[in-house]
Length: 185
Image (cartoon, rainbow, N blue to C red):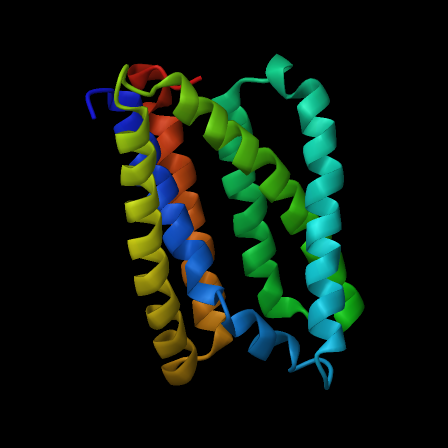
């Protein structure tokens, strides 16, 4: 990987994917604090997916007029705020509202990450660099999922959400600080 922008993207998004994976399958355990049964989990996750879909459609129409690094940074901040807000959730309607905002963050982040990634691939190394990213993402997801379980078991969900939010802010700051110098835009 020769491209400096790609390295920065891998670092910042690697930190973010790690943050996201801390919650991973524990989301179901968290939701069951507010409602018995699996239906609440399904409804709240469906709200996230529908929101992501609708806002991704909107981004597909206007996203090329917005700087990609700005969209990626906005996605990190939106998700940091949502994860921090999970600490204060008291019922399923509040959780669903947050899931809708989380969908906005996802709709901003996924297309912008993919577009920046595609722009900075090294010629004749596309498969290698996509595979490198998948390796990084899979490793940090595995470590994050295990660490998330340990954090919740020892300290509780509040500390988990604080850690996730802090890591998303670090991802934001990494892009903010280095995007112009590395040519990420």
